[in-house]
Image (cartoon, rainbow, N blue to C red; front, side, top):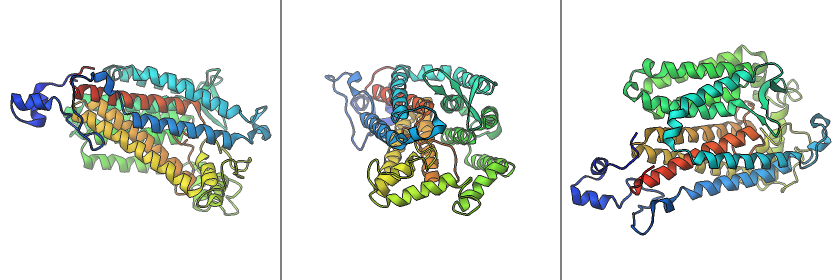
Length: 423
C-alpha cells in the first residue's frame, strides 16, 4: 500500500504534463465539505489535523449520554434487584467508561493504518480466544441467563464488542488481499464466511444474537463495498436472512418475542415478552412533541426495564418528545454519512484498506443505531442492542470510541497525503 502521493497518480487524477502536475500538487484530489483546499508552504501538514466537526459531534453525544444515563438510572436505587447502589452509581460508572474509552482512543489514534492492517489477523484470533474464554464456567460472568462478560475488576468487558471491531479490521484486510478474486464469488467469500460463522457460533452459545447480526452486517457491508459481485452478494444476503429466520423459528423464546412484537399490549404478552416494548411505547407516547421535561419521565421509575441501556431512547422520547428523538436520529445520520465520506476519500487516494475500515465503522454505527431506534419505536422486534455512544455499557463505549479514533486516523492520514506528506 502506497504511503506517498506519487506523481504518476497525480497525473492520472488531474491529467496534463509537468506544469499541470506542479499546479495540481497544491490542490486536493477530493473535495471536503464542498470546499477545495490548497496547500501553502507556510502551513505545515500536521496543522491540517483531522475532522474536528466529527470529533465535536461525538463529544456532544457523549455529554448528552451522561445526562440521560443519570436521568434514566436515578430511581434504580429503589430496586432491590440492583443491590446496594446510590442514585449516581450508574452515571459514575458511565463517566469512568468514557474516560477509559478516551484514553484507549488516544492510543488507537497513534497507530498508523499500516500497523492495523498487519495486526488484523492477530486481533481477530485474540477476539475468538476471548469469546471462548467467556464461555468457560466460573470465568464468564452470567447476567440474566447470558454468559457474555469477563470481570476485570473496575468494569465488566464484553468480548463481543471487541469481536465487532476485530471482524471489521480483518474483513477490510481480507478484501485488500483478495481484490484480484473479488469477481470469483466462492474464492472471495467462502473463507470470510467461515470466519464469521466461527464467531457467530460462539456468540450464539452465549447467547448474543444481536451482536452476531451486527457482525454479519459489518462483514457483508465490507464485502459489498470491496467490490464483490453484486448478484452473488444478494444471494448470500438471502441465505443469511433465511438462516436468521430459521434460528428464530427453531427457538421458542425468540419466536415468542416476534409474536409479542406483533401485539405487545395483548393479554398474553403485556406482562411477558411484550412488557419492555409496551412500556417503551407508553414512554414515547407520553413525550408527545416536546416531551415532559428533563427528569420528568415516569417510565424510568422502575416500570421500563433496562431504561439506561437498551431502552434509553424511550426515556429520551418521554422527556424530550418527538423533537429530541428526531434530533438524535439526524445526529446519527450525519455521523454515519461523515464517516462514509472519509472512507471514500481514502479509497480515492488508493488507500483501500483505510477506506474499507472507515466505511465498515459507518455500517457498524449506522446499523446498530437503526436497530436500537427501531426497537424503541416498535418498528422492529425487541433485540438487546445498545444505542452507540449513548447507552450505558463500558465495553460498547470503549470499542465505539476506539473505532471512531481509527476513523479519525484515516482522515488524518488522508489529509497528510493530500498535502504531500508521509504517513
